[in-house]
Image 1: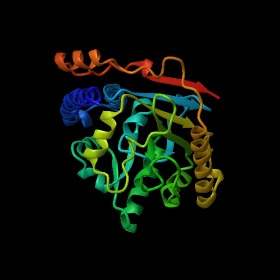
Image 2: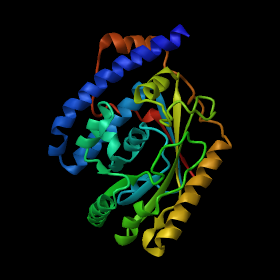
Image 3: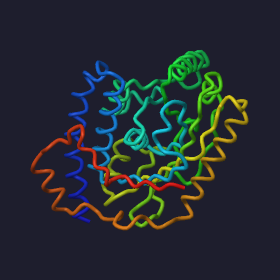
Length: 292
């Protein structure tokens, strides 16, 4: 429809401005202290999701602030996952080296202290594991996508156990999270999926065309990595995430008012005003938290 195309184009214009703003921040980002970097990452990511009209729904067994130190593992669907997680849990990420080549996003990831790994290189994996162990022992937190690839979100692929080994060696907590994207009616959406031969541009356009999306994040029980060997830790984390994804696919009603889309008039105003979202403009109404 023409209306959907117009909305997509307006969002694309706003996103371009927001990315430009992000590039300017990224130039000085490493100079900030850790707390300020986290605040900037959270606000910038939340503003990006707001531009794309993506709401976050969180189901948690533990309060999110408890996930302050440790290794966070999550199923992987899209390049958007990084910004969904950063908007609620700003932290560092472990990503494949190929991410560096993604337009703009790759450079932003590099400037935000993402750790990159060369797939299939044992020596590089050993180097990265030592770096992760040191960070975990110093009280830092990191996000790893242990599938090593992305899916359409309907299932969870097998985990690479080696990516979880640093949590055991550092005696750190492991936080398994499950992620799913759905439309305003709670139906599974593959629009954000960055899989197969899909290009980054095609993936972005699919997201821009959606009237609205919901990212459903489920926080499953925390695991003390020191209580497991690598195989059992991997199996337990995989089972928790797979069970949570399956539960989300069974469907449940969204909170009242969560399906409301941004009117076309709001997108027009945003386009004509050419205002950039600023740090601190994070809107809590875009996040819904449920406790189990």
